[in-house]
Image (tube, rainbow, N blue to C red; front, side, top):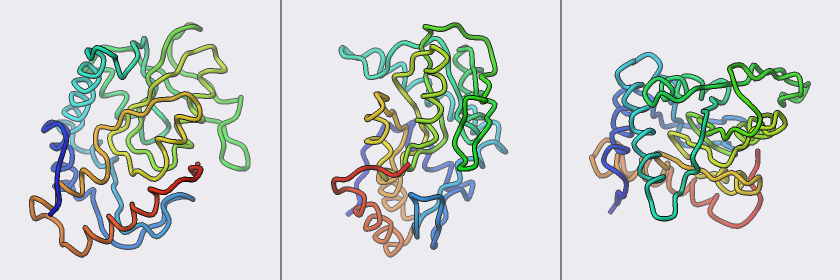
Length: 225
């Protein structure tokens, strides 16, 4: 039987994404990491639903506060938040408004390979030595977060943590760790699938196919950016 284990507020996110039609099943390929995935999560649909977007930001705020209040904090204190272009920008903006934390972001310039370059401009007010929390909507391999972190570090900013709404559990956490970045997911794909299955929202076939797909990323090996 499918099991769930997450903060009830975080499970709200699984429910609202389902209601918005943001969770789809089929055969999807997104970049180099998510190839022939049986599940697609379009977190960006939140932007069309202000109340849900605000609630998502509140969930992030509450999760961060809880992790910072632990005896051994799991999130460092930070001065700024930075949204990853482009999926993380609206999440970071909503969080900034809810938490009252200043925001910065990269105005991206990319090379022929699609990678951020030194020409990327950091928009917003900041000073070298400040700590930045990176926010994105979803992580697969982790390349976009690492690129953003490296560009911020080049400007003298400190990056230790990144928060995402959904972790697809396809090597992103391990990849970020290699660059000294701790990942804080509000929901993992497995927890989301377990919740939807336990509520009878998805068929057993798609649940099992998705879990089998995730299992293929559980072995050792480097993550793909």
